[in-house]
Amino acid sequence: MSPILSVSTKIEIAASPAVVRSVFLDFARYTQWQPGWNIQPADASKQPLDLKAGDSLKVNMNGNVHHPTVVENSPETFQWEGSLFGLAKGVHQFHFTPSDTTPGSTTFTQGEDFRGLLITLSSPWWNGRKFDMGPWDKFNADLKVEVEKSLK
Image 1 (tube, rainbow, N blue to C red):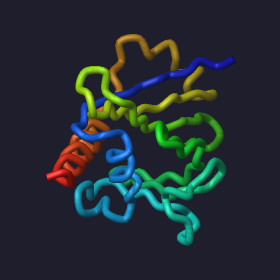
Image 2 (image 1 turned 180 degrees about the vertical axis):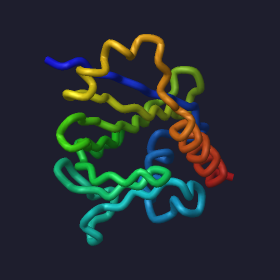
Image 3 (image 1 turned 60 degrees about the vertical axis):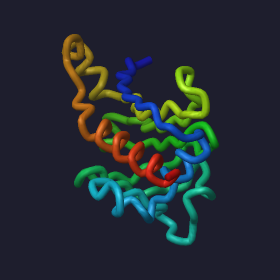
Image 4 (image 1 turned 90 degrees about the horizontal axis):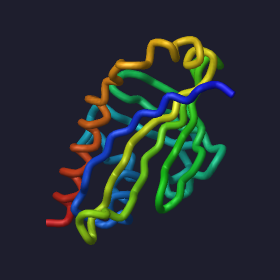
């Protein structure tokens, strides 16, 4: 079995997981609060809440365009899987978890599990390397602002 490289970042948001998820899944409004990201169902007739495992997406993350497939769309998790020419695969995850530190709030976690030939070949160089979490941290912070603004 090939090694898995897992990276993640999280933020506390002062709203319930259901509220955070509803703002997250409102893909059409992303340009109003997060202009660097665009997520769309490949089938324009599908609504984000109706997406299920196997449905295709078009994802633009700050100019990096992907065409992943939904793995899970549940109240707790939204995940997709993408591939880089079959040499590497990644499962990108968004988790909406009740906060352990602030009752009524959400711990929003964004992460990815990478695996495949490229990951196996590069694994000796992982030790001490840092993954640039800046774009994900910015998305998380922008989501927090948008969610908490919507509650005022």
